[in-house]
Length: 158
Image (cartoon, rainbow, N blue to C red):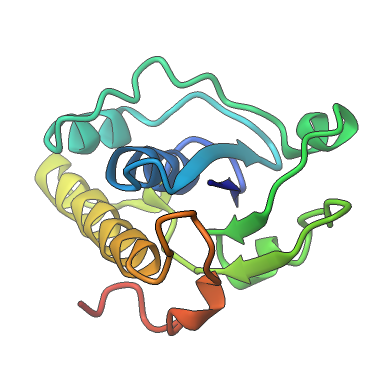
């Protein structure tokens, strides 16, 4: 089983969704956690769109990536899901075999009417689900595999 950490800026959207999808769809191949550079509570829109998928993330407790680092947590894979500028600020964990970057738009930056905001967050959720499923398909039953084998492409593209 691969231990994976998903990192984004606030651990309130993208990384929470990635963690939930990896744990729920990974069928024991991965054990996923998530953390942020500046942790904040999970966005209400994220809670709603994940509930539509049958996943309750309302009790997710935001974690600091720096606290996990200081506590000595070890991961096989670190995947940043924030934009390129924020990705460069993420620390390097000792012993990491694989580090990858899957950029997704920030759900907290959704604009427009409530329906438009929900549609925007749903599109991010769906892109994250597709990326997780694609990555999981590269893993063997023992969790071996490399997220870099999955093409880093536009997250909105199927």
